[in-house]
Length: 425
Ligand SMILES: *Cc1c(COP(=O)(O)O)cnc(C)c1O
Image 1 (tube, rainbow, N blue to C red):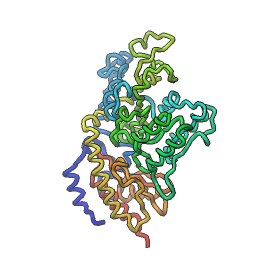
Image 2 (image 1 turned 45 degrees about the vertical axis):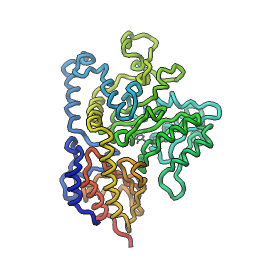
Image 3 (image 1 turned 45 degrees about the horizontal axis):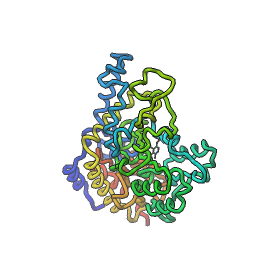
Image 4 (image 1 turned 90 degrees about the vertical axis):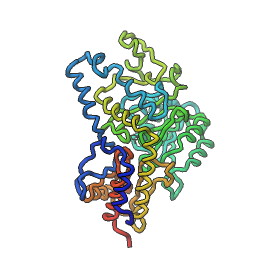
């Protein structure tokens, strides 16, 4: 490696990010006290503000009991509304189009109840072959729910032979030639495995032009890349809040439904008491009156203690702003890429994430040619204090999260790989 630790430290002094707002885990190996935490695409770190936020809500329950619904400092009945504005700004939506509720896969199902409606020859669901397993299982079970064969109903997009990521042109081609058999396109905005950022506006336009509904799983995109869901005409989307959104393990999910679908009485939805308009909810009538907003997709009253950490995190994104965050993200990921390019030649390591910064977020995935990814991740952690995510059999994922990762973290990744993976003879 020719890049030096001094250079990394200099870059950190010039471009420090917001690390001081987060708790960084201690290293359990290597020469530095803090871990180099590159796993924020699996589970984001805890903001320092989260604990007090959570304790405040817990205290309100202790002091007020049921009266907290109306009298807590942040009253529980309309609590979810506090999250709507910042969540809408994060994904480029209007407030009526966004709600935070449930977890991600549950929401994908609730959305498919409305938006996957196979009819006639138009039955297929397009996903990517490297879709997160939960999404694969969700769409296959939806096909079965409609009495269809999941093996023929679900179309899995594969990269060209010898390539690792999808080409937009190939996706557009498929939609142009076979689009009349497609009921739903449901892709990851950023692929969890390869880190590829899809061309969301182009694929959305092509899918809709073909007569399909286009939804996006933004688990790896929300808080990672700038999004303009309303302007891009996306039909629906959902994301979780525990990856780049740093809201804690299993944190709540966000949902987007485009304005043009709001209040449409022809759309089926699964309802509960939170689907009816708030003003008359407690009249406890037998028939609901859903509002003409995405809140009509809510079912249950929300878990208040799970909402606070999302609020804290979204406020942080509001304060920093996605444009500034994206700029630091591009610099930091570009720096890690440069260091990996010094280390990978001669070693059985290949970066599979697209090289164009416009086609990726804050993630570089590395394929290892020999040995197990999990074994290598373990050594990086215990010998160097570097925490990365392994996806068996052969992918290591490094996420230089711009809110809290440092250039020095990136330098430690490259140095640890150089020390751990032998040069092949
Ligand atoms: C993380 C992730 C999930 C996880 O689903 P949960 O319902 O939150 O457990 C689903 N899909 C994708 C694409 C993910 O990245």
